[in-house]
Image (cartoon, rainbow, N blue to C red; front, side, top):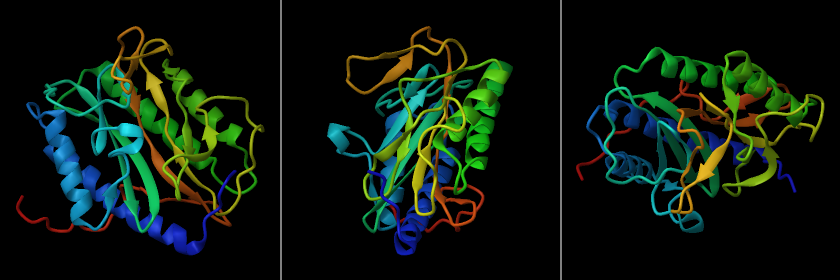
Length: 260
């Protein structure tokens, strides 16, 4: 069942989105060669909790950390730990925030220092695929239009779209209906309507689309070892158009955090 959100619920998600974006900005500032993914997780948890929210991911189905950290050939669900990031890496930082009983979810793939042109092109195309999908978000459009936009942009740039993992509804729960594939013919699937809140998240591979799950039960990597990028926003469908609740261009100034 698709749960449409009230104006009050969307307002809570907007506030949660601001906390999430502030956290992503702090992570980007700290993202220098030599930092570990575990250190990034600690920064994120401190940022989220200091602002009166909770990390959505921590403890979710047993997940052991506050964020997902997925470097290079890791597509999604990487577990933070002792892995040290190096110059030229890319890393997806996936953050969920629970505020006022409502979840928001967003991910961004960042370069660590200077990256090679191939990785830079992957990041550019993946972000463009997300933007193309969001542009289709309006009442009366269909979910197939959203996924088709991702597929068209990514494949035109020479990349492949992950099919086993998809976006989702978000709000009262971290994962809600509907599922949002990043492919598919336009004009199909559910009709978008005001009050729907969607986590749209293209996962784009530099090589083939095939994936492989690791033995830890969470981490998903590219089957061929090629780099992957992951971008995600939480989007509310309005009576006219949409609002990106996790927009990085409309975040409030960060609050000061006390010493740990």
